Each structure stands twice: as C-alpha cells, then as structure tokens.
Length: 334
Image 1 (cartoon, rainbow, N blue to C red):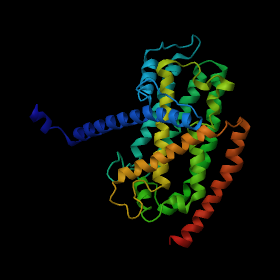
Image 2: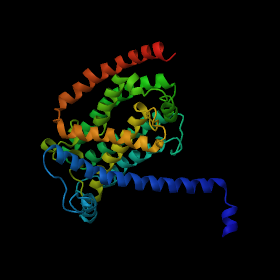
Image 3: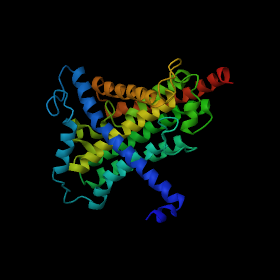
Image 4: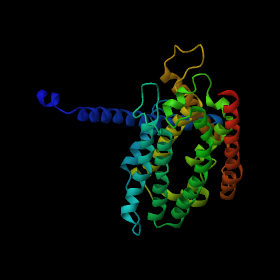
C-alpha cells in the first residue's frame, strides 16, 4: 500500500489535498450559515425590542438554527403533480452550486486561498450569474403563476443590478491594474480603495444587497404579493437549498467587498502584529452586520421603484465613478 502511495503521481496527491481543503471550506461555510442566521435573528430582535431565539440551546438560542435544519431534513419532500419534475429537482442545485464555486477565487489571507486566478474578479462575476438561471428555472418548473412571477422578477432584478455592480468595480481595477484579487489586496498596502473610490463602494454595496435578494430588494420572494415567490412550491431540504444559497452568497459577497474595498487581510497601521486572517474576519463581520442592519430598518421597495433605482440612480453614479476614479489615479497614484 505504501509503495502504491509513493508511486502515485503528484496530480493525485494535489487533487486529494484540494478535495480536503474544499471539504473544510464547506464545513466552515455551513457553520457560518448556521450562526449567521442565528446572529441575524438576534440582531433584528435587539433592534425591534424583542429577545429573538432564547429557548433551544440555552438563553442565547445557540442550537435554534440546528433544530430548524433538522426539522427541514425530516419534512416531507413534495413535488407538484403538474410540475416539470427534472427541472424542479435540478433548480435548487443549480442555484446553490455557483454560490460555493465563487469562493475558490477569494483570498482570505496572504496564504489562505484556493486558486490565485489572474481573472479572479471576472470569474466571480461570471459564475455568480448562473444562480439567476436556477431561480428562473425553479419558478418555471413549479407550474405556479406566483412562482413564475417571482422567477421573472429575480431575473429582471439581478440583470439590472449586475450592471452597476460590475461598473462600480472599474475604479478598483484602474487603481490596481489587475483582475487578480490578490493583486487588488496588495494594491491597498497604503490606503484602502474605499477612501479612493467611495462612490464605487456605495454603488457596489447597494447592488450586492440587491443581488442577494435581501431587504429592501427582496421582491422575488415578497410574501405579501407572491406567497414566497419562486420557491413557494418547494418544501423540506429543497427549500433549505435556496435559503442556503442566500446565506452562502452573503458570505461570498461580504468577503469580496472586504477584498475589493477594505484591503482584505491588510492591517491598520501600527497594528501589523495581529494576523491577517483576523483583520479579514473583522472587516468581513462589519460588512455582514451592515447587511443585517439594513434588513432591520429599511422597508421593501415597490417593483417599479426597484427598477428605477437601478437604471436612473445607481447606473449614472457608477458611470460617474469611472471618471472620478480616473481623475484620482491621475492626480494621486501616478
């Protein structure tokens, strides 16, 4: 057996290592999802003067989300009689898989990264767009008018907000001269890009919330109008896949924001003795908290307001940011 392992090609060993690292990342992400949901419920409860989960797992409800997951696992899995069964089954997987795939390009520290892609930012944007197909497929395959409306809303919303989101990072690309996410972090050695491109950060942050279908941009699953929207016919573990997708993207989008605008693992001056991964986690946590805060304070927009905001406000500001970023680079980064 030992001789066989020693004679194994290096590619086999590398594949095993990457598989193990991928499994570890999956466990970390699932742990984040579990307690991000709990943290969100506790923070929202605090903002709304109520306790939040406080029974299962002690006074802080530490096992409440675990109990919810177990409940979903044992619930009956139903498929509507007139649904397109193959597409109905495939849709949750197609929505979730890209959410996990994009994590491969994100550098969490100087040495903790799966792939140092030269076009890491382009890879993230391209792969994340596939989730829209899964959501639209879920709405179509359910053979339900509310599901279809939710799916169509999601496609229109994600395409509309993808445009200002992509344009808003052009300033970052101008400053760093690269699409490589590690190079972008290294370019923020002296100053974070949030200070050089505040307009780009604001547009990117708002657009990222819309891409996540979170309040106030949760029109695709507006329960007051569409009875839960595109996943209204899903139950049990398949429904959990859609919820998992949202929170994995929350993890990924907060990590990408940290890399692009907050300097990633780069420390604040005079505090360089703190490990980079700690800095990344602190900046990442601030972004997640702000996303939760917005959910607890902002009302849902109307569908027409949502689309007008993307095309009449965010898009012009994102285009203006390109001009401002070019001026900043010419004056201060030559």
